[in-house]
Amino acid sequence: MSDLKLALINLVYLVAASLFIMGLKKLGSPVTARGGNQLSAVGMLIAIVATLFYQQILNPVEMIVGLLIGAVIGLYLAKTVKMTGMPEMVALLNASGGVASSLVAVAEVERYASIGQGIPPLDTFIVILTILIGTVTFSGSIIAWGKLSTKMSGNPILFPGIRVLTLLMFLGVVGCLVYMYQGMATFTVDQTPVLYAAILANVFAFALGILLVIPIGGADMPVVIALFNSYSGLAGAASGFLIKNDALIIAGALVGASGIILTKVMCDAMNRSWLNVLLGGFGGDSAATGSRDFSQATVKQTTADDAAILMSYAQKVIVVPGYGLAVSQAQHQVRELADLLHEKGVEVKFAIHPVAGRMPGHMNVLLAEANVSYDLLVDMDDINPEFEQTDVVLIVGANDVVNPAAKNDPSSPIYGMPILDVDKAKNTIVMKRSMKAGYAGIENELFFSPKNAMLFGDAKATLSALISEVKAV
Image 1 (cartoon, rainbow, N blue to C red):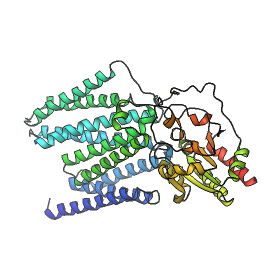
Image 2 (image 1 turned 90 degrees about the vertical axis):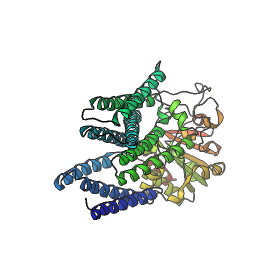
Image 3 (image 1 turned 135 degrees about the horizontal axis):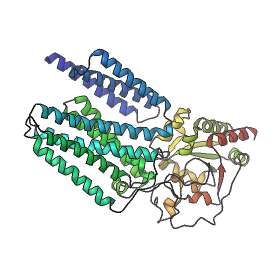
Image 4 (image 1 turned 60 degrees about the vertical axis):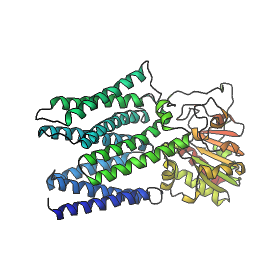
């Protein structure tokens, strides 16, 4: 390849990398997130096309056909996936990135073996790293997807000897990789044993990913998704070093870094370390109550009529959106309710917990879809001091992020987790379908508070009834 052509390819990669960085920056705000996503997509398209031309992998017709097929699949997934299904989608994308990186590493081993040439020490190390991270990310992300999508139980899966088996799988991976490291430095024409070792390393790493994730409970699964997002980026960056692709290195590094940051944000919001998540996950399908017995506790119910009157004559109302709001796709109804209350002179704000829903920013994006003013969305640390002066807090589908057990019950799995201090308000109204426990799988003390009233039903239908009643007040 001529120097001019190589320089042109590098320039194209630089443009793609710039678009990645600008797009990532714009993703920091719901106002600019859509544009940021589009910039990143254009950057990735440019990088893919440039790579295909540079490596002469496909002819133009094959390239166009492949891009069209991928675009149709991506468009279908983007249009059909629900907002509540985004974490599962991220898990599948993480799995795809991990297995792709691992396959690149295995293909590189096969390429060197076919020409009987030893792999340089640095490349050997990168091959080993890529196989380990990529395959663990693949299998672990598939299990995370299964737990999030309820295809399998969200409860921690434990059995006698699981830690020992996990250690044995890890040692198996290490053993295969050490054998590969020794063998790849002195390739001859026939290095079938080394190829078999690479395949066996993938098998052990696949099992290792499964064993690392199944003991983790459903409440920690979004953190696992964020962590594997980082892993997939690191695996991608490693494979970029392996095949000398600058765009892949930059994209992988950005994903790896942003995934680590996201993991830290979520762990801080749950008052848990990533090591604590990996070794002691909690939450699942069955509810636990900690040290407190709620079997004899009473729950006060209310109606849409009474709730509408209470909010219409309030001076200040704070709405706490949660996963139930997203499931019902009731963001437009909650915005209409807030507008009606505002017309009546009621001050309305939205309290946003960092992990409300399932991922940071979930509620911000959901409410931005309904054109809720971004000025009304207040983060947890800023809104908490206001609850004591609030007449009514309307909690729509949120559960664990408003559970006072995080402050009051040392035996609770979520003890120490920062929460929205809704229990300090004069009145709370919790909108839920039932008394079922939240994502952490534990009872919510707030439901049994004398200041609380439960408004049962589907969020969209109940909010529509509230809107009608508020109009009538």
